[in-house]
Image (tube, rainbow, N blue to C red; front, side):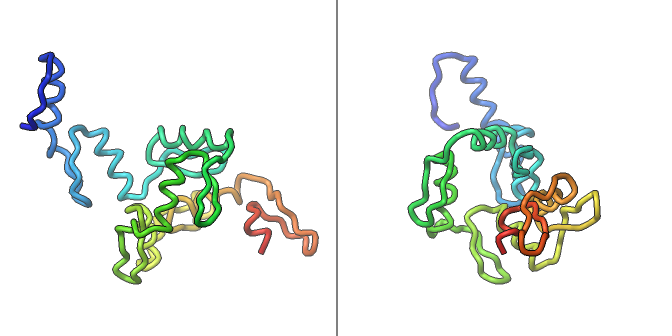
Length: 182
């Protein structure tokens, strides 16, 4: 089928399974094909916006456990890879490369409502909820809903952590430094 040659029959039969089951699991969202159900299931999370693997350190969520494991290392090490466009630093070259797409023309996904463009399909899915009003991520503690999982994760800190940043002017306390600075 593909013209590849193999020295061992066992290697050939293992490879052959790729072609036999190739269209067995086909994504209706993007047309990508998979030869087994587990990789197909992981792929579907991208379109659904599901990120079941959560970092206990910062609350960031991921579609794959391996991505979480790689991310967790960022809390331990230095951020040696710096974006020359905006100065933001990253712990891996791969994360820098993904980030740099926001500065380049590699934004393949365009919102039909407002024209805003995105490099990742999961980002446009989250963005489109702004137009539809859909807020599928609901806090079980208080019922507040969010467009994306990261919004829910940030919110949930209200219920689980002490407010660490206190304003000396007004006495208000904040969980995130970015809210405190305003």
